[in-house]
Length: 386
Ligand code: AMP
Ligand code: MG
Image 1: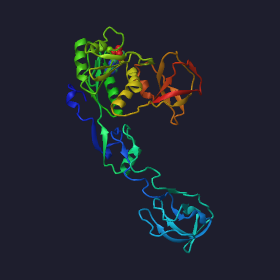
Image 2: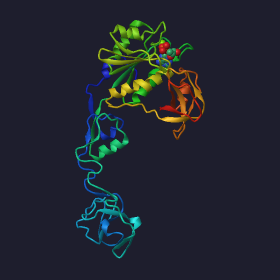
Image 3: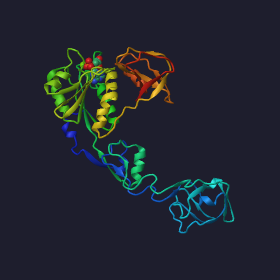
Image 4: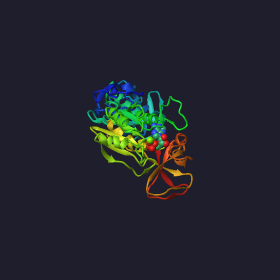
């Protein structure tokens, strides 16, 4: 969505309640606690027979059965057993389950050569969670397995952090809206859309502002609009070029700059700071740099802003399929293809950080260590997965 005023789109409360069906991918705002012990009573985790372990191996009289959802009224005494189904409560007196596959039954008698271990195939009361304990911590982005747990404890509505609103401001005289037909010296505003997609992936609502021309006053005005959102992400205009107005315009608004260079490539001229009570990033304008700096650095800010308490970058190791070398000093992020097994990685041929096509062919980035110069085929190297 391209908008002119941001404030109209910024909802007030920072925590909201959503139905469980809409909770996937949202960040939990209040810890979820077990409403009772799980399981609430000792439960069989196999189909078979509830027995007294001391009685076996041997033959036992089957005194009844208990299915999931039922309870067995009597008690298992010496020489007896109860047929039991997965999920059913373990009858009093029994202390182990023998799997049906390991038994033979005839005329009300079960025979097995097995000697079950104490409590075998029984989940004792409270083994999975005790009543009142936190089972999903606040600040966690909910996975499908968390949704299962919230459903288990009967949370029909879930308290989650409001999605941060992230204003996106592209700069550059040559940058035109994507619906226009650019002349050869112009480029379509792909950065606004890649950043919007990256922001949305981490649960934020992106708002694309009109492109700022390379002039002080319009840049300053559009930055002011962007500061009405929860976070402002600018692209372009942060290099050493004659028409790079982003930093001067921010400075004119009283910005505090925390850093204006990072030792990565692409993306060295990344700017981070705060103006009034809002944080901003000035992402470098080359599309490859914009994507890498968001993915490696701004994404963490966006996630913390969204309420996540922990936002680590997932960078496992894979084996290089070829020789690789770079000039040490900077951490390099190069488009790469990770094999389906996730064990092998191959750099994608690219023509530098303007090469969006190469980035799109890749499913990951190679992460080249700034303290190492060369790698041989088969060497482990870190990978940032898209
Ligand atoms: P800058 O960081 O402003 O010097 O821009 C570096 C390069 O990225 C230039 O070639 C720009 O044309 C290109 N560029 C800047 N902004 C965008 C954008 N929003 N979308 C696509 N390319 C861009
Ligand atoms: Mg520019």
